Length: 380
Image 1 (cartoon, rainbow, N blue to C red):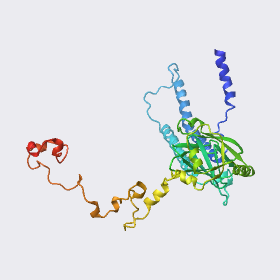
Image 2: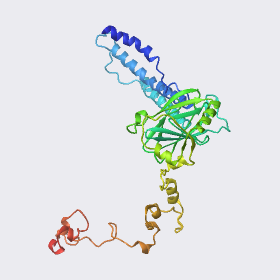
Image 3: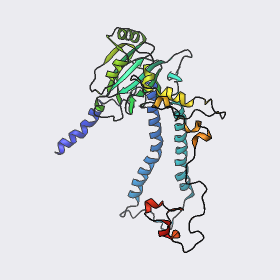
Image 4: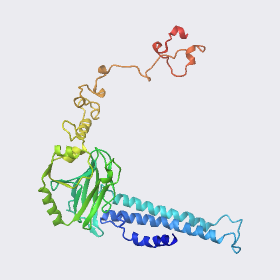
C-alpha cells in the first residue's frame, strides 16, 4: 500500500503536466489580460500570506517549550517598527489591488470596444468589428451573422485577430455565454441584451459552453469555436449560404422548442430583425414587442403640459380595454373614495374617558356594525 501511494504521488506531476489550464493559457487578448489580473492579484496577496505562514512556523519553532536559549520577555508589549510593518504592508497591497481593479474594470469592460487586438497591436481606426448575435435556447446556442446573412446552431466561427462584438440574449431562462479561451463569461437573459467585445489571436478549435444551470439539458449546452484566417472565414460563410435551410419565424419557433444534444446546423438566410424580435419577446404571431410597449409608454402625453411621459396603464388597445389611465382622467371623471389619510371627525370616545370605544387600540375608527355584529347602542 505504501509503495502504491508513493507511486501515485510521483506520477501526479506527470499526469497534471498533460492538462491545459485554458483559463490561465488562453488564446485571446482579453482572456490573457484577465489571466494576468488573476496572477498579479494572487502574487500581491501572497506577499502577506507567505510571510505570515513562515513567521508562524518560525515563532512556533523558536519559542518551543524545549528551547531554553529563546529570549523570554514577559513584559514586552510594543514595537514601533513592527507596527509600521504590520499596518503599512497590507495598506500598500490594498492600494495596489484597488488601483489594478479600477483600471482593469474599465479597460476590460465587456461593453467597451477593444483598444488593442494584441500587445503592441492597436485596433485600426477604420477596423469594423464583426457582429454576431447570440441566443441561448433550451438547450443549444444560436449564432446569427448579420453581415454575412447566415446563422448557425452550436457552431461559432471567428476570423483570427479581428475584433468581435457579441450581442447576447436568451429565449427562455438565464444562461451564461462562456468561451474560456477568448474572454470571461457573460450572462444571457430573456428580454434583455448584453454585450461582449473580444478577439481570438490564435487559430484552432476551442470549446464554448453555458456556465449557468438552466435545466435538464444544461450538460449538453456546448458548442465549437473555430478561429480561422480571413480567407477560411470567407469560404466558410460562402458554404453556409449554400445550406438547405432558412431561418424564418416558423423555423425559429421549432428551433426554440427544448431539445438536447443538437448537432451543428447552418442556415443560408435569416429573417430580418429576428434578433430584435427575440429580445422583444415577440416571435409569435400577434405578440406585441417590448420595444413597442416601451415606446408607447414613453411617448409624450398630448393631454398634459408637464412633459411627463404617457402613463404605463394607458394601454387599453393592447390589453383588451379602451379605458383611459387614471392619470389622464379629468378631476370630475375620477370621483372620490374614502381613504385612510382623508380628514375625519374626532375619534369616538375622545371626549369621554370612560367610553368603551377607548378600549380598542387597533384602529382610530370602529369597524362597521355588520362586521362586528354590534350596534352603537350595544357598544355604549
